[in-house]
Image 1 (cartoon, rainbow, N blue to C red):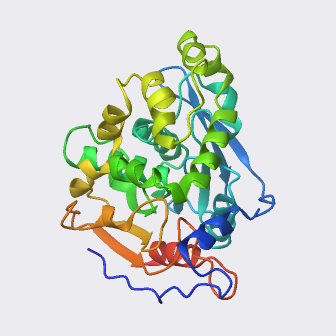
Image 2 (cartoon, one colour):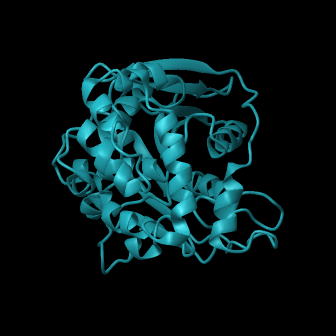
Length: 329
């Protein structure tokens, strides 16, 4: 475990509490304002993800290249993706913001849904980055659902379940922010009546961005005729699980949860979570519940909500923590 103890997070005086911190994340970040190159990464099943690259003009051949991974309802233009890309760029880091399958500019390139278990999609993206930067050092910052995906991928590689790619030794560090590593526990949490507005938001957003390639499938039309889901659990039971080859939500959760693999993650990892996260219960990260590998540094903030962390100066504390993590050699 790497010794790492940044200054404690102090929330903005008008954003005290997990819900307010979480809601503050929807504030737009504006355009990236940097030269960007797009890479379409074809996946083994015919779908594709898209990488949006910003590269400093003086980036050295052995410089750091970081993959930024969004959460459930995000894409390459999510506020935290834009903020982090700009800040990494200022520090001379080459950045690749991903659109997972069906998201952002990958919307029309998918016949399958993205979900918590799509770890192979991230490995395919990293394979492309490793090819574009053959001598570069690699890193990953993955938020929420993306955090689950990368932890699952690396845990499976560490355990020998999946073969490690040739570039794995160049993957220096990762950060997982508020990852829903225990999908059963998170699903149970989302059933609470106080979180119904969150369910409504996610369902409305996710249903509106189901890719045309998925909508054209017969099995989608069959399930679309049923009553509209009211919770994320119902959404997973009605759409995500069966359209992705699972018998139901429970099988999907058990197959896709990173909690089953976190003990074998060998890459130095920073886990950044908040005690007042309304979406991902902090007890998911208890050592007694899910043993972590020695390579993982857990940073549990008293405040911050779900991917919030807006401090007294209206800056995002998590951004500074992430950059400091990668700056340590």
